[in-house]
Length: 454
Image 1 (tube, rainbow, N blue to C red):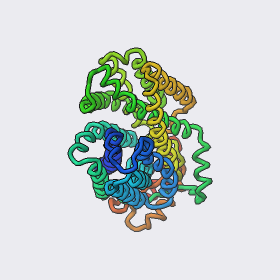
Image 2: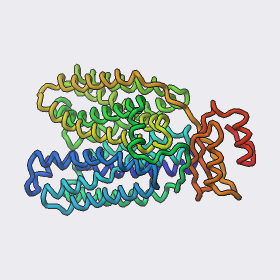
Image 3: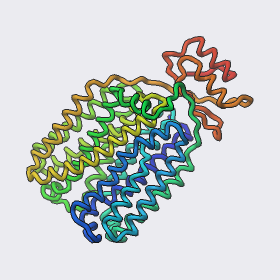
Image 4: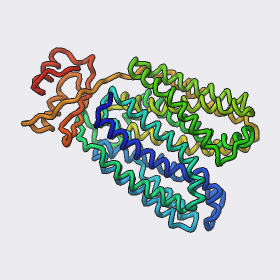
């Protein structure tokens, strides 16, 4: 089970993620209409105002993540959230569509999604990582549904500029949530100071690239689906736009009952690859159902339900798997490339969804998305089962400098990383149990002053 520190940190970092995403998503269902009130607004510029956030996120995730492997992650998150809030304020004060575009671009420049995930991986033990990432993934899915339900209602109350002010407030509240997360100091071997070499190392790893393709495909399909599905819920299910949230929310809740057992099975019984491929197959199955039954209300909802279940499983497994296979010294960098793939997928998914609507043929539209998912499954068959490391919790030494102590720990065969939380007087030590022999156990006992249980 998670300890109190892990529960508190996971809740805080998931809330930061959710607050940012909620502020972003609330704009999407209303801006195509509300954006027409701005000076100089055209359909192209309105679309750019919506999409520029994701584009700037995709571009700047990698620089932020490269810095996060060298500098304090909490400080970088604060900078990102301040940019997010500043961009919201600029958009809120703007009367021209160009001001909104500038504000959205600045908000997107706070590209710290990967930094938040890297910090979460620092403050959670390996064996609890999937649970923590699952909570973060669920918070993203929940914020998506709540935003699509809340955005139209809140826009009617406070206007589009009021929505941007809400975005600003959420960014500032998120900074306060960061106070719940402990300060960490990371120690590991073979740190590479060259930015380009570090990025090249990450981009050469085949399984990492398959995970980057996976998050790209997942969010491309999700965004295209949410551009495409509302018109079908109206036309074939007879459900008005204002009530769509009442369809999304129950489906999300139901999906959690399937997602959590899948996550436990993947981690506890080391079935991550099998569950991962099954989730992609479930996405394909959901899309195939929509090809043949999109004109039936209940079949439409059933197909969406399959997609939601698989989506939530993938949202939990992807960051956890990424943290297992990424080089320790380049963890944030790998997550940055992954987050860039996520936002690029969302950006292109919105474009694709718009094109599919113009086809005026729902079966062909769902067939295109199903074909994309099948290609994704074929790419991911090459994935190897990840390494399953463990973390042990050690008390910090009373009469020895922690940096020197961490360096001595890293000399022990089988120990790969030490994360020190000085204020809590503990260290999380990542170990490969298969590599810990009698000599390593003896050295660890000597450093800790007592025998350490694995």
